Image (cartoon, rainbow, N blue to C red; front, side, top):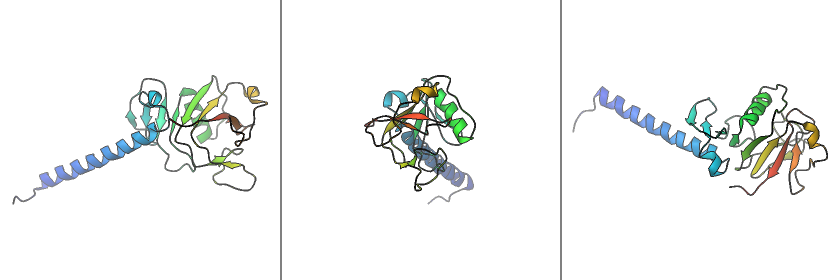
Amino acid sequence: MHPITTATAAALVAGLAGAAFAADTDALLADAKSAAPDEIANNATVMDWDGNTLQQGSNGFTCFPTPPTLNGTAPMCLDAEWASWADAWMNKKPFTASTIGISYMLAGDGGASNIDPYAEEETPGNDWIVEGPHLMIIVPDAASLEGMSTDPHNGGPYVMWKGTDYAHIMVPTTGK
């Protein structure tokens, strides 16, 4: 039996750490890519929530895994307009879309208020909804949302967070 040298032990620890990082990266990639159709996810940039690029993409979409701290949020894939929207929402800044934006959340979500963009849990009157697979659309003209349902139980698209800078159309789907 050969004694384990310091160099051998260091190489073993580094190898195990590298394997754990690769497993974590693979899990994060799979989680993030579950948000969009394969045609989108396989060509999207995938980033973790620390800003590290896990996969370089070419189609203008960025996918993120389930965030560790945002209540009810699930994996998502955003186009550039939605990335601007997300920055404004997360930093509580004003937002007006300059073009139509698309975001995929085909893994569904864990729940959110349909009327309050910053509600963290269900309360009486905040119209809490747990949505299955869906995509989301933002439009540059908020007036175009007038007349659209805000009822998440209507069996079709509806406006979420109407009357706020973060209003968007929720479009329920059947997933991938």
